[in-house]
Every structure is written in C-alpha cells, then in structure tokens.
Length: 192
Image (cartoon, rainbow, N blue to C red; front, side, top):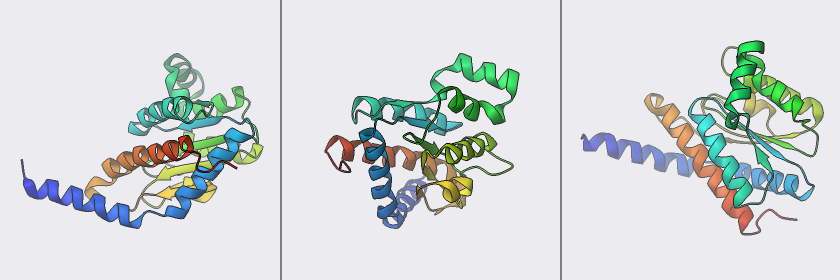
C-alpha cells in the first residue's frame, strides 16, 4: 500500500472539513426539523452510490430522528417497472406524484454532480416537481452543485479538492452530513 496515497486522501478530507458551509448544514437541520414538526415527510433521492446512501439515510431519519422518511430506491420492483415502462428520467417524479408530494414535505437529494440536462435528469425532474408543489429541497452535492445547488433551499456543497476523487469524497460526505443532521435532531437541535 502506498502511504502517500493514504496521506493525500486524509489530507483532502481535512480540507473538505475546513471548507464546509456550516450555515448550510444548520439551515438543512432547520428545514428537516420544520418538516417533521408540521407532519411532513422526507423523500430521499439518489442514484448509484448515492442511492445506497438514500436507503441508509431513510433508516436513520425514521429510527433515530423520528422523521417519516421514504426513498423509491427501497422498492426495486416499482423502480425497475417504472424504468422499463416509462424511462429512467421520470422514475423519481412519477414516484413523488404517486406519493402525493405536498408543500409540507421535503425532498433530500444526494448526488455527486447535482443533476444537469445530461446527467441525473431524474433528479432534476423530481426537484422541478418539488418546486411546483412547494416542497422544500435540501441537498448534499459536489462539483459545481448542478441543478440541486440552484433549486435547493439548503445545499451542502462538498468542495472538489481532488479531481481524481470527486465521487468518493462526495458520497462519503453525504453520509457524514446526514448523520450530523440526524444526530442533531435526536438531540433536539433545530426543533422549534
């Protein structure tokens, strides 16, 4: 094992810690706490490794923070049926429509790039629907933040500190941020 690689990765992690927008994290906590307080639901979306993070985060928000939370990722049958019948671009928006997303709810997006016209269009369409119905949007993304950064009410942007390791840093920090939010809420932080 190359010790220099390990040192570089950990040094990059330190640089991310020092650059994270604490105000965006605080705002995310407040939005999700407000969603819980008004009886809203939290819908968590992601693709690839971010999809696994969405599934894990649903467990933590429900079990630890007491937030009614869901992700379409956990229903593989519906996800693949919608992909087959309607196309992958619409799987999240159609799922949110069937779930009757409303203004009391929030959508949380985990994504490396945040969605564009060319990548993660499914996330973009879901966020457009959330905006249309007045639901809050929070996100943890990297690169330039894409559509998520533009449409989110609170966006935690994981800075690019290494072009070779954008994805592992982005997906790792999704977990750190959601664990921070869940833990803060379980300790009464953010509640009104």
